[in-house]
Length: 245
Image (cartoon, rainbow, N blue to C red; front, side, top):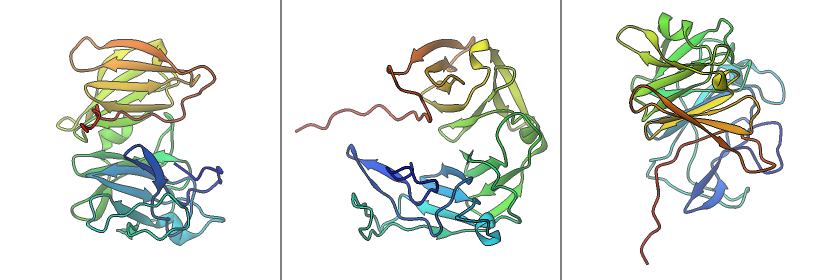
């Protein structure tokens, strides 16, 4: 999340521990139109534009390790904290600062493309163990035609926003497998995957389509957002129980 005063640049992430929101470490350079995602309990931000275009920023990639032993959180914007962003292998060029993109964590890697929608794209994959970038597999890139999310960072799902088709990526065949098709999925904006389900924000932003992908055929139903609210992003958290006192 950006700061509560809705500045046009992402200067830091907001996080919630024990039900309380606080500020994460500030980015080296506040930025917009960047790729952001997580893999193996580490948050990554790649590319983007600051107050004006800068080649160094557009190629930069930083990570925030949530499992770092130096842990701290601040509920005050200007308070010093011990968490920090670390630079990793940069991009070869700045062509990934064209849109605000979700980078997808999958099997120890971070997958991202340079624009939304079903238009032709460029794609890269970051190996978190090797600290190295590689070209996205041809089939993965060709079929990336809408929002993508991974379930437990093991299986990737994608909604073809133009055709309303849910697909699952098969790494052995480098192919997006057709799972189901529905008019409700046309114009999909954001998706999340977890607990055997894929949740999709429709174009109207007032409905969330829930898809049970644990078994075929895929079951679906619609959940309305609270009155007066529009869904901008969606996440599936593990079920949490109240602590015993």
